[in-house]
Length: 250
Image 1 (cartoon, one colour):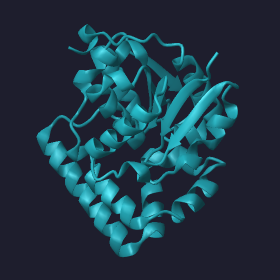
Image 2: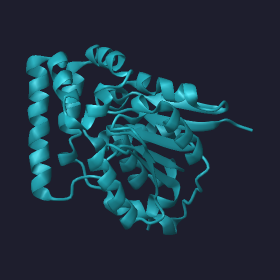
Image 3: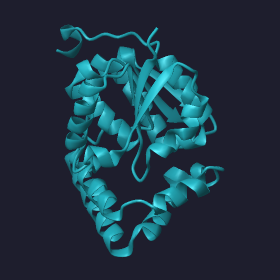
């Protein structure tokens, strides 16, 4: 029997190394391709999705996994090119901002973040980024110090372009794609990640078939905080049904 094929996309400021502990906990017989956001361009979520589509055309997967920004890119691809995404697992990923004023505010915030990164460099930016309440749990995680060290070795100009170009304020919301994708999608949130947990409840109301998994005693940085649980969810997601008829994506 051929190995199950899983493609994984990490989040903002990250690298494929962020999946290392998840991969170490996966069962044998699962072939993993960890995609670097830098390989996807990331001038916009649309561009990143198109680059990911080209990669999957060359090397198809049975399950596409995305965390945070990687999840938004994976969702965009699943919505626009569903034939390339037989199954989908979204870890701490937003469905998008619908209100036009909120979108404009977020785009401006991310432009300021990009400028701050260019002017002051990665270390100051990274420390400010992880000081956000969103990462309160992660700051106390054993993996935090090593993760911060990896982040400091990143490319500041790339991340500046990424935070601005891939801003949620410049990305189309994809709530409307959930009903068609629901039967073959799992949405994963941390118990302590209040904003994303609330969004997952809305997603479940919009798409009752959607499988929502809550990782207890975890915040936003799921692959780094709870890698063993993330591995089990990925294994379970490989058993989701595949529905790719034209009716599903009408």
